[in-house]
Image (cartoon, rainbow, N blue to C red; front, side, top):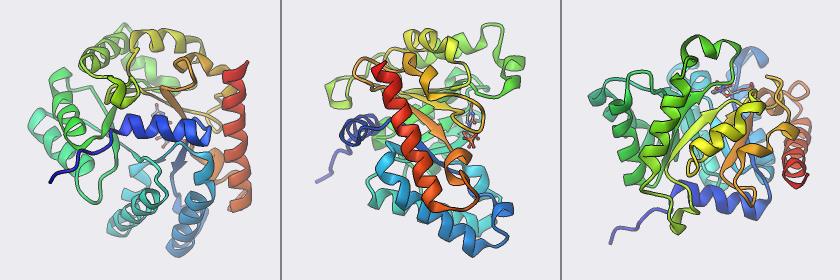
Length: 276
Ligand SMILES: O=c1ccn([C@@H]2O[C@H](COP(=O)(O)O)[C@@H](O)[C@H]2O)c(=O)[nH]1
């Protein structure tokens, strides 16, 4: 008998509501902060374990594991295994995108199998048809994709301006429009990345992609403030998660208690923003 996986968005919503948190815990281990791999591994796993109660999901940034070679890939797998044991949905931030047949291989690699995440960030630059393999894999395995719509960095408008972000958002909405039933908490498996650094635009992006889960990076180190982000959420405070990486993992050097305190504060500030 094949068990149908619980959809990522349903798990995300349930965890958000059960634990009362909209925080996505970014785990981006930087070797230069440690000096040796053992310390990096221990601290990263300790931060995950200690901050999990304040997080709706975890987002390892693939680049930092890739930078550590095969050892880093093994660490990523260890992080994912630990996150699964904590019942934390995993968003792999790998920003994959390529011609369709290669996109299918990326989708297989990072949305299915033991080393995969539950959701994957996807770069739409190669065109709408290249999103299909990712969306198909996400649906097949009960995962999700987060398509880059409007990134958090200062130079995003160079290539995303002139209506490009709007076009991508329309495609995200279209791809997800036949989903979003009650089994997934009203959300589709096709989500979007919208930088938390664009608070004045959040209502526009929320309206353009009503069924899309939103991933908002930029809290803390990039200057975004929790108090400005309420417009990204659906009624009931669902439909979006806000990520912070450096602002938690390196809140005060390598102090795990400080990481916990930062995660708790971000969680509380996001909840306060939704109450106000
Ligand atoms: O638009 C985007 C998309 C992804 N990111 C990623 O999120 C984290 C942010 O890290 P902080 O330390 O909290 O600034 C990082 O992994 C980025 O690659 C983003 O910042 N903006």
